[in-house]
Image 1 (cartoon, helix red, strand yellow):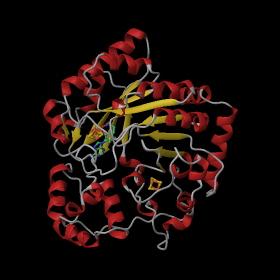
Image 2 (cartoon, rainbow, N blue to C red):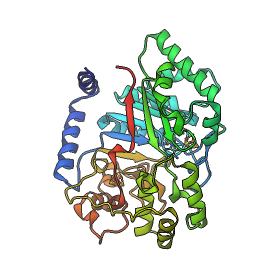
Image 3 (tube, rainbow, N blue to C red):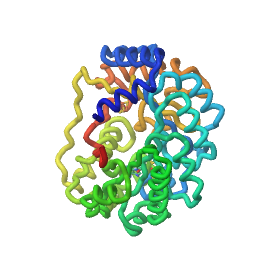
Image 4 (cartoon, helix red, strand yellow):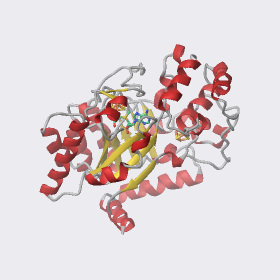
Length: 382
Ligand SMILES: C[S@@+](CC[C@H](N)C(=O)[O-])C[C@H]1O[C@@H](n2cnc3c(N)ncnc32)[C@H](O)[C@@H]1O
Ligand code: SF4
Ligand code: SF4
């Protein structure tokens, strides 16, 4: 039934151009063609990297992210949608900030919806204005994922500094009621729960809690310590890192089992500055030597062909792992043609199998664990 719904949804958003691009993109992906004439099928946009909260480990919230802060320009966004929106099946508004802070966010959503693009948005939903709920429901948004990393005020505010549990829950309640009043199923409502030490005990109550409050689905994410965002003196302070591991990782989670640590661990150790620290952490945490993540030469990451991310300032990346780094640039879509960026030398190199060889440098792909099991998503209603 869900499958049929998906197929119908896909067809309702298609036209000849989109279908042709869809086939072309998958052909390029399956054949491993590095220089492409296809556009991505899904994209992620960062409307802003500003936020109204200060989550303890978030590079934006904790103030470690040194990128310039700003808002995506509406005209640039519209120009981009006019240009490549005709190939897109879905857009997610997320990034390293709070998308609902963008003054034109509802215009941005509605414009994409008018081009038959399915739109998703991630938010902390900590907004006191009653109007925002009406705008969310009327915008045509398909999915709204609400970050709620605790089931009461204490656990919420332990991580989401400034977070107001009753405000989130009031907004959720109003949203569910308004959808009911309008006879609408959308936006489907998701609860995103980052699994940490202090909220570990709430994990079991999560499905019941989410169902009772009218959520349609839940995503449980393993906590990322975001170590690569830390200032250099903190990155090399292994006592501080041990403290982070002890404070945030859920019981029983060994650092090497945590995908974000694996990513940091491989990246830092192999390519970047902090070679010495690895052995120090190994001694402290007494975890077995990290097995190198080896990928078969036939491994291909779909993100490099089928997806792309655009930051508020127009910088394009294959995935969020790249947007961490200021010195790796693929191109700026507000200045250059998208296909030129999609075929830039970095993109082309990343798509080639040699990316996993020892000689290839400057690309993160070869260290990426790309573990699909990292996120557990479950639907609560049919
Ligand atoms: C950086 S936020 C941006 C969107 C919005 N401000 C929010 O919090 O939902 C993107 C995603 O990262 C998640 N997140 C926040 N802190 C995290 C952490 N330490 N580890 C893993 N995911 C985290 C959020 O729940 C959200 O789903
Ligand atoms: S609400 Fe989102 S962007 Fe804001 S500090 Fe928290 S995780 Fe970061
Ligand atoms: S870093 Fe990982 S997820 Fe990102 S494009 Fe490369 S292989 Fe894919």
